[in-house]
Amino acid sequence: MLAASRQLPLLSNLAQAPKVLSTRCRCTARPQSRGISSSRIVAMAGQKLIATDKAPGAVGAYSQAVRAGNTVYVSGQLGLIPGNKDFGDVGVEGQTDQALKNMGEILKEAGLGYDDVVKTVILLADIGDFATVNTVYAMYFGKSLPARACYAVKSLPLGAAVEIEAIAFAG
Image (cartoon, rainbow, N blue to C red):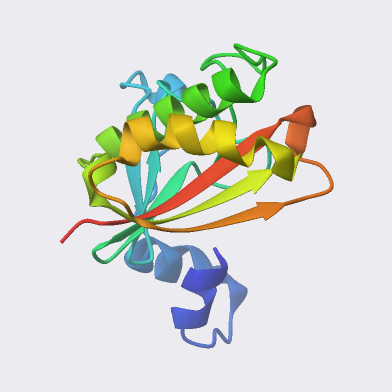
């Protein structure tokens, strides 16, 4: 909504807002309320919000991914099992594998794959897990080798051991 509000003309009458917003943004209701597929791409203010039920929903106020032009920004993925907030594995190896599977489903929903990823950021609860995460990561990105940053952080949402985000080129 913030991006849309920057593009809107100054309104002298608040009653004009719904008309102006409807011409600037195309939004769809949640699929369950409209009886349509739960996988969807929602267009808002020149951006497309990308979401799929084949990956866990956001654990906060953000989207699974956003496409802006030819770039897709995939939010940080945890090793959660789609459909619930449970980790499939308590270990960093299993969480890394599941996080990357989740990322793959989001990329697929955007019409992309791992080879389209140009940059990733890995957040680790323990930097000592770097080698283990790197081994699993190489199984997904071994050929494409996107640019990458890796940081140790104090803690991650839901007590996760790893979180991985990505930027992909959809050119």
